Amino acid sequence: MALPTRDRLPLILIRGFGGLDVEDEKRIAYQGFNDGTVYPGKRGENYIYEGFILRFLKSSWRYHDATNVVGYYRSKVTEGQFPLPDELSFLPTEYFVDDKVVIDPAMALNLIRTKEDPLRTLWVFRYYDLDDRKFKIYGEALVRLIDFIRSLTAHKRKDGSEPLVNIIAHSMGGLLVREVIQRTYPDSDRKADDYINKIVTLGTPHQGISFQFLKNWIGIEAEKELEHFNPVFQKDDTKRESFTQLKEYFPLDRILTVVGTNYRTYKVSASSLANRLFSISGEFGPTYNRSDGLVKQQYAQIPEAPRTFIHKCHGGFDSLVTARESFEVATRFFFGNVRARLRLVKAKILRGQDFFGKSEFFFGVSIKPRRVDFELFHQSPEAENCYGPFHKDDPER
Figure 1 (cartoon, rainbow, N blue to C red):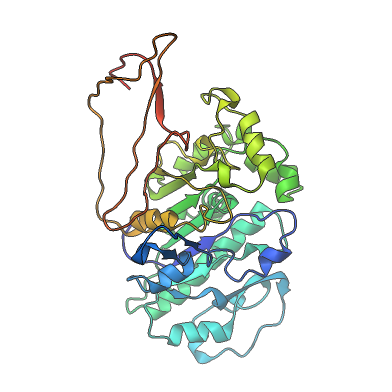
Figure 2: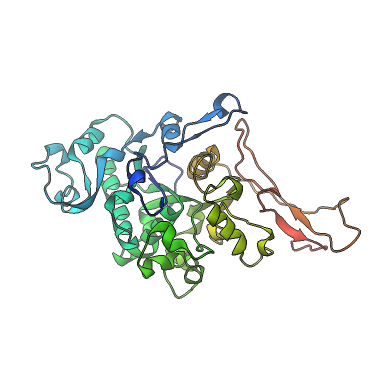
């Protein structure tokens, strides 16, 4: 197992599905990772967030875009651009031909000639373009992309070593990463932690979706593929693809799950209503929604893995994909060198008790870093994610 690192590493961005018709999504150059949010009530550096892509390019880490180096096609590329330049002779011929995911020679040449740090590259995984809806195909394509990145980067580095990669994945994109971890790499006798450093998932339904018209939403027809979204399947200890088995294939402390809580701003009202109707254990019935509009808060988490809450919806304007908070928590998870723990040792409630019935109390906290007017962790009554209810003395809680 390769050890985790805080070093700058190639970063892969993976978007979730956009619905039945993804033709419009294909025309979006960076799959929404170039969309940001304007915050009129804030000032200075906090005023405009440019989105993941541009913020990484402008940041002190100075990443540069390498997305065009790899092409994604609906059918196999059967004719390569041969002969290849001598500078690309270190790459296997099959990287350029006989697959739906291939390296573009001209763009690869440009990448290895640039003076930019080869470790600080951004890659958008455009799996929509493959015109396929099978997890197996996506998993193989993502592993192929990682192999490309490692080979190109190793050639540019002075020591020739192949780096690990970091991944940010939204919604179903996180399940594609798990497909790679729990099936694709093991099926080829490889371990994912030798190739992937850290993973941040944004609103990924790790434990499934709590309502059952998902087939019409994402357009996946094969029953085997739909199983990935079934809560019963995800909890089945006998299934190696279930979230309960993830720890057997990848260290959980290298996965951060970012959980959205603002279902009210999600524009797909049918799914938001369904999350209220199809409540899960411990949610106190339809009184609460407890979702990002699509994915339940509980189901967006992986037990024992780090997690944080941000008060954003699943997708769209000012969402998990486009909000400044997602960038802040992801970069701290990848590059941060400080770890803090907050413990409540003892508390006494002095007011607010009901004269009639049973009093219940909830406890929450929100955290902001200095000079950044955005929360890294959010709990509130509006987010419906506070700890509780507490209604009696309980030293263990």
